[in-house]
Figure (cartoon, one colour):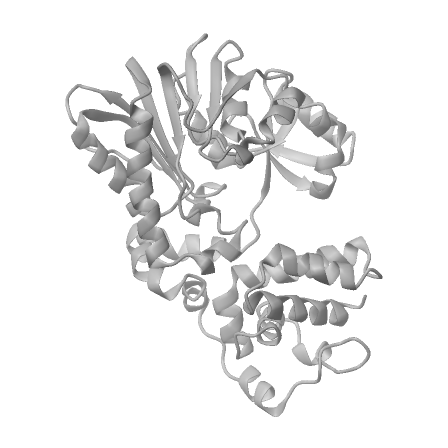
Length: 400
């Protein structure tokens, strides 16, 4: 496929998404209907689509319309590529530019900070500006770009240096990242990871560096009883198992289907994790980890479709749920134990606010950490709480 044909394909996929189709389904449907497209073509179309979803507001402003065509015109303009070189109508290229489109493309482009602000939902913009403060412009610009690919080194099996060497032998370049001692940032060969021997033998796992940094907050002693209360796919449970092989880790999720990957991942990693059925947790634990359901706003570089799907009503539902889950999880904390609350959110209403409310029930914050993409990874928040003791102000730490 020519570059112009790839843009035309992305236009079709984006129009399907804007009409209500999930992004992955729209891409799959396009791929099945265009089996002639090679792997490079499919990857390029996918990149165009996700670039447009990340930058939907700014691309629409640059391209003149919130349509697949307008978004691809905006992409060309954002990347300083002449749209008339691709929108020619020749072969499989998009139709030639209209007079109205030519007129719009002659309009001076907005300032970079104005374009960045357009890539937040309008209703959320005042809140995210307040929450990010002086970091708003820098974080907004970073959220327009593709997220880095990070790996977590399984320290139960290897070292970071040895993992780098194993990956390099398979054409995957990875550099140590300062956010966490286990973090590697993939700089070349990312598409080879899932089929690499280093991955298949459990030397590395895909996990964001900020998520890994959050786990450094977690106090974990040998033999500790640990409950990952909202385990999902088990990424944090696996990381804790690697950091403390003697810990007794139980994974739980209200939806058992979300945990279906834990057993094969644990086997690959050489980890021992017990799975609890939904609502069937028994006993108490030295550490209860709550990676709470949230907006995912800190990960919107990776899942940009979710950014535009979030509504005020859904955010209100999530914040109520977060408080309920904290109360539920606290029942499983043993005397002298700790409760650790985390989200992959940038919003204070999901982070400091539920913790401040929970502190009124007899808990105190001993440690807290907030990360944004300025720190290198996704946006994350974490706080460690203990029962009883003098109430203290929530002190946030930033690594930026």
